[in-house]
Length: 230
Image (cartoon, rainbow, N blue to C red):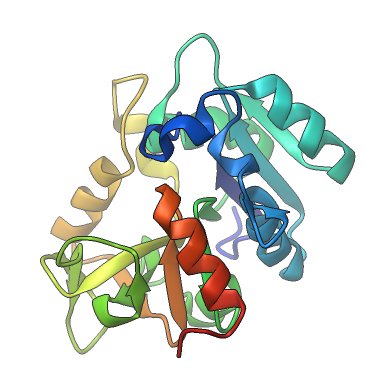
């Protein structure tokens, strides 16, 4: 089994309820920011690192997602009849992703700065890490409410607490998924075990990040990409 990640999972199955009427008839990943679908912003970052495979999970309006993504050479992992959350969704997609650690990325954020996947790849140390999360200081996390998800010690280890927002991109080892009995579950279950073992690590993103999980985030993200935010 290789310890170098060479596959990426993009999470795109959710209902997007915070988007209100915008997701009544379409999935959130197809909402556009500066004329480009959110999922395509994420795909551009994924393709930049040239992984062996790119997998996208789908559930809500899966037919629309398939029409949009299949021409782009992306492999789909359809969750049916029930949505599986991040942990269950990643586990269901493992036959498509292969062995070893994988990148994962959410599709409801815009990154302004270096490709976070490249930064993660350069810092990945499988000897001491079971997961490496790209985190954003709250001052650089636009349109995100709350004090943050993690604190980071001088060696890069993460613990739960305020200060850093998880930006939705990571490298993670997947072996622990087999130990969780539930069909649908969050990756927080895996992170909690890694944190207890001192093997949950983070990077602080040097650019700016915008949460596009709600309608106001669209305007903020477009202003960010247009250079209106420092």
